[in-house]
Image (cartoon, rainbow, N blue to C red):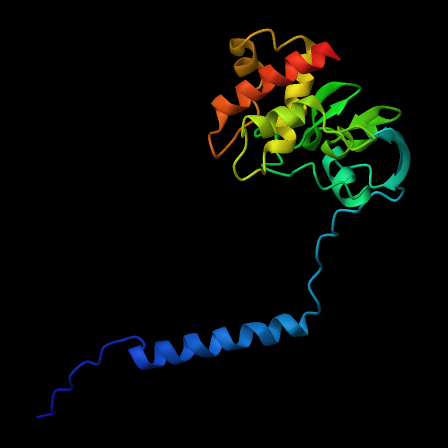
Length: 206
């Protein structure tokens, strides 16, 4: 009588499956290399031509050849060497980069340099008089200790001058409202308001 044979399971063993998977994975780089180098999408091209912009900064004429995407803030800091204008958020939300454009407050990080062709820009470096005397707003900030770390101070001072020039410093409530875009992480706000009041009074006397 013939002996019965036990049926063997059909399929691959775990060892055979793992060996095959590893072998196939190792072959992929070889096949890719044989197929030739991969083609990559071309990188975005930079502007071929630089833009030329002329302006007066702190009373001096300047002419720059720049990438047309350059912000006024980066032009002042990186091309004119006027680093008193601070780069804070770079999104127009902190006021640290405030300068005066034709006497009006401007967030320089939000303005392209080429938009300021022919304009008169004032930074903190050009606010004091030529004889070395401080501007009344600068002196007021010192008198009222209206700063701590000092990082926001150039923008605060220029914003204060702008508020006076624009007629937005009639009272403390106006000053708080129209300078609310200038942030002070040290929270020296009461001293800043007092300084702007003094600076306003001194500017009106001049």
